Image 1 (cartoon, rainbow, N blue to C red):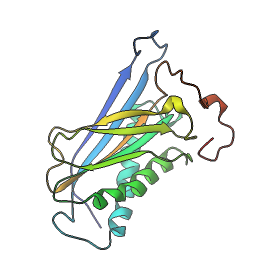
Image 2: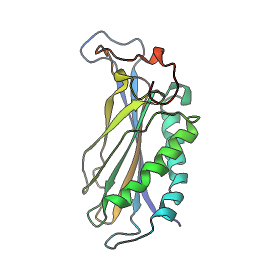
Image 3: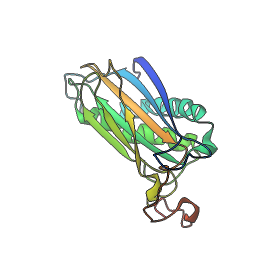
Length: 192
């Protein structure tokens, strides 16, 4: 099954501080989005599995582009994924990205085990979606709980879906609420 990409967008935030001391190296938070035509807009499709499988290539492609913008895979510490389905679609049309987008990121990042946090909604052009971030190796690393905004001024249109991946080179600047530190990850089960 093929899909039609109307546009892609890459954005990177460079964060030097959150009103505390200036970081020695800035935190980079990036978003990669592809806007595609929804092949099921306006109708019910009982079998979404071929669509999900076809989107794995898109997941790898977006992940590869975003990682390059953030300085390489060795620098990525947090990730997430987001979906905005246009009004003529249904949430399940976007849910295919949970496997396809997550698979693509994990493959390009050498198979980290932590769950890939996600957010999805139905909306129109300019919909703001705050996509959750979590540490790539351990879900309980509180310092890496964050968000990245996924917004396009002209997407998705009624018959489109915006699929996005988000990544960051670290946790929140000045994180100080305790919990498991990234340097203390030892179990390597995706949680601790």
